[in-house]
Length: 476
Image 1: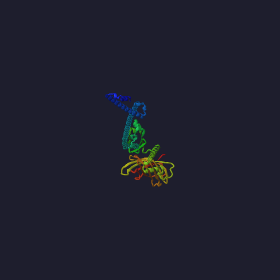
Image 2 (image 1 turned 90 degrees about the vertical axis):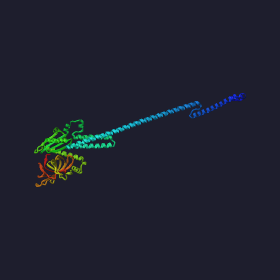
Image 3 (image 1 turned 30 degrees about the vertical axis):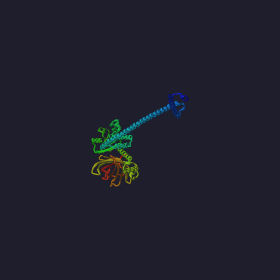
Image 4 (image 1 turned 120 degrees about the horizontal axis):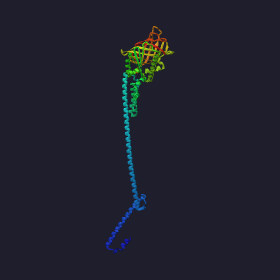
């Protein structure tokens, strides 16, 4: 302001050029002043803005710089956080990728394991099928040679059942269970095949001495009587019997070889060879042993039938039930005070019912007394065996009645009915009608000759029987 007053008061004394210079300087000064004012206004705006961000406006430009610095640091921290978040997200993505890879690897591993399990199960089933096929072939060969195969067939049937279970589990996706069942089926089939060969799977694995096993487990009895040979072979609780119309040892041994597969030296080492003279009396101990053996065989057969009674035809089921209750023997009088045992032997021929085929017929049946009433004596059939040609029939159970007429001019009559089983386990009926020229009333102490009536006498619905017979009392 002093400069302005001074300029105004001395204007008259100044020359024009000097005045123009002053005016120009004044304009510049004004412009500068306006610039400073604008700059101040701008600073105030910035300062006011800083107060919004909780910055003290009294700190002036320094506060702006601090605010700027803080803002810059804040942005930096934000950037760092963003960077950290990006890194974290990146790490998370990497972890997810790794977990996904691990899951994929586990899934691939599980799929691989499942494929392996299925392959193992299929292989086990295939092996079992092969072993079952081998067993079937061996059993068929053994049957053709007349060997006993019932035990092997039972084991083979169980093996086939296990194989079916294995296949069902395979279809259901239970591969481990399928493999285990198939392994069991293979072992059972192997056992069945080994049984046919006369050994078991443990013997094969351990390499046991087969000759020693045969000696321990195979029994052969040869009985020659009346020009014929009866051979009995026992192996692992199985029994086979057959009749030969010869006494030639070489023929007998050849037949046993065909049945057992043993060689001649093995047969001779283990067989019980007995020749019974036709006219010689059998000693008491031998007779008793035969009776007891026949009775035991019959009881075993009855027990076997009772165990599978549900599988038998209705007729046999009914007979077994009546046998158990005693109703099978019909109306009887008072029981005998002393039970007496008898042997009835047969020797004759059989003629096929369907054609004219003929075969030899022989054998024996054991009976024991039950009761006598009104000239009717009732007997229980306790066992025995009959041969039609080479076919064996085991006598299982039955009954016999003797009707005594008490008239010397009338023959006593005998009716014997029994159930018999052939080597194929078929159950059939034996019906014999016989007569006696002497009275059978009273105590029988001597053998009595009987005559068989034909065609009333028959067996298995296949053969008419015609033979001479003899009823012999046995010492108790």
